[in-house]
Image 1 (cartoon, rainbow, N blue to C red):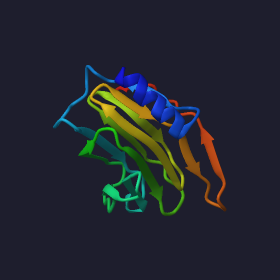
Image 2: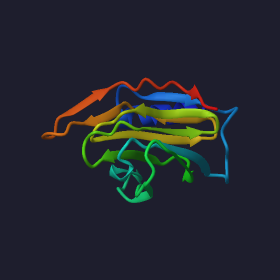
Image 3: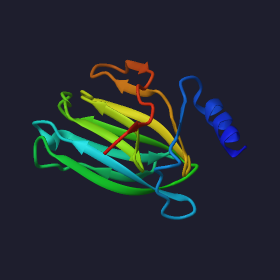
Image 4: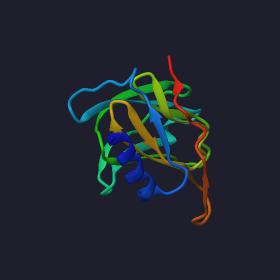
Length: 161
């Protein structure tokens, strides 16, 4: 019943394109309301240009990363995020040519992933509990003006190694 109520709440808050991913077999709970999320960043040839952060609904930054020094290198960070809170993952490349990649995972399930993000990308999500992740469509921001291209995320709970 909780899953249905959470989905209804999310659907009304975010509208069409919401994805609910069940990850029960792989989720890692670190406390009653905190889940360990793995954030993986693969840098391109200009690692110092890549920065990212996760913000809560109120805009406060929960965790951030950047100041990378090695090109074509995988950086991994684990962060405890509270369940039932809306978050936005933001990633940017200061020169607008981001050809690296990134992924966010809960346990062995990847719920956000992208290769090449040009100037910037945003993904909204919520960890409903240890077996549900809700992901909205991604938002890609163009280099010029405020043009926003919204497309459905191609992620559907891809298993990671």
